[in-house]
Length: 338
Image (tube, rainbow, N blue to C red; front, side):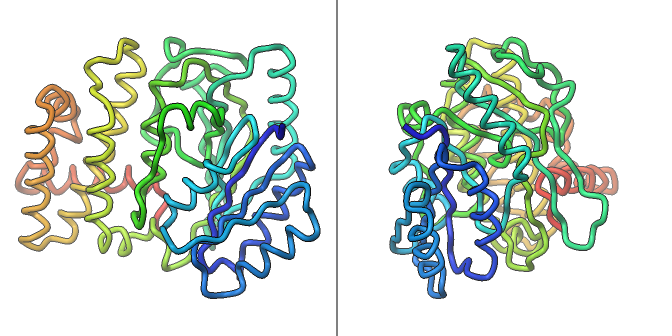
């Protein structure tokens, strides 16, 4: 069995996918790289097949009709044979030295019989034109270099949410919890790092800068104008997350509070972009979103509204706009757009 399966969703990725694959190949034959060609119309499949020919024991290629990023992740997971599973987008890459450190640590933990359900490492915003790259770590939020549980977590800053870039799951856990991302929908990476959490019992955090998150293409899903144009998909993902669990039934208070915090951020992101778009239709959608949350789960609605950003999304006047701008700045820190 392979140690780590990495799904690389590709859609018209011919111009940049090689960097992602080359850095992953540094992990050697304990890795399984699953290139998912999601209905590309360029040379993506050709490049992928060349890698498979050169590295038949490491690289697998699966071509499918276009289903979107989530369906490509689903395909990667369904075909993964490794003990652990990670997603690396085709325009991103990993640090080769950090990858080797992570793989060595996973081997050590498995040998000791202490392999965690969720392994976490840092990620770096590789933003075009920015010399000093921003590193997202989990210092002061998570214990380092030890197996721990949700009861051991500390205070997460606003920028320290667990994202797809930082997460390596036990493959069996993802399959057993029934994770299935929606087709033709952006922002499903939020579901990937939310829905499985109650099934995670043990975690491990290694303070290394593994994932390099590229920011700079104008068509990226985290670009501000793109996010405003796709706000309906952001709302859909937010509601799917809300419906995924009854958080009032989660016994671990720290996990429950973290998941409430994450949903609060999703609600704020939706609200901020609807307010920034500014049309009567968008403002009506914002009201509808909050009303839907209230109708679905009053307990959760009150929890989210009790937090300062959640409480202030409907405030009128200059103060309300200042708070919206604050929410926008927090969202920029987390999503890295513009």
